[in-house]
Image 1: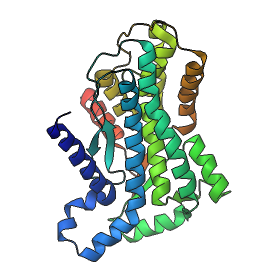
Image 2: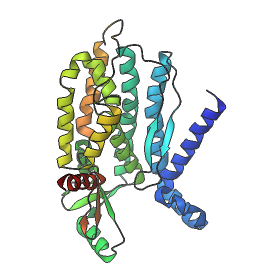
Image 3: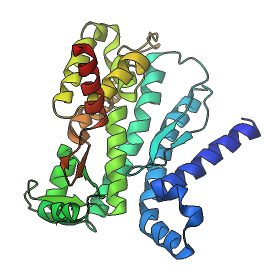
Length: 314
């Protein structure tokens, strides 16, 4: 790999660290006092360092599996996003040679989410020890006293719900929400990234895994599964956006890859199905909800859906 490519990897890594740490404050950092910069850094570094490590290990799971089979691949390109509350779109690597068979495809696909899953869980569980509960009544009173503020609420997956109840509860989720410690939030985001990658479609990691496990016959029912996925928009319209991204860019079906010299062994099958089933436990149906003094705000998906509906009704 040339120096220039290494330089881009390093630059994006550094920029992602900054956007994770300072998020939408990054544009005002040059004009802030040193004390405030240090204060933000001290509060946020457990989040930015932990999530960077989770994402890095996710991508290196893919990279090392590819290199094991002698398949050329780039190092991770991190994707900085200077917006709260997350600060990144994750990272990507580019496989520079064709994957030769389904065994290779399985190993390259599965080790990324396996790494981020294994690392996100302890971050969440340890971070919850330092997290706290805040009542919705208290949050609402703060919003009513300052109309410029917004409250971002993070949805629970089955695993996050029971972990939170075990460590912070029991509590009524209709009355209280969790104020995540930065380490816990890194775990929450890591699980979300893992869940999105495990969706069993196209070129997503879950698409690689399920295609390797089932083979060509999965094409007879994958669109039914995709249609079921779109029903999630009943709970959160942002899944319409994801549906469009999958359908037009990521694709629903996986491109053809030949079978290997031997089928997947039973350990790979157990591993693969376990990873896909973990999606049920870590997938939040409504990941992020924005609340202002006027109430719950529509998501980007809802705004796009309403705009499309208004356009079609004319």
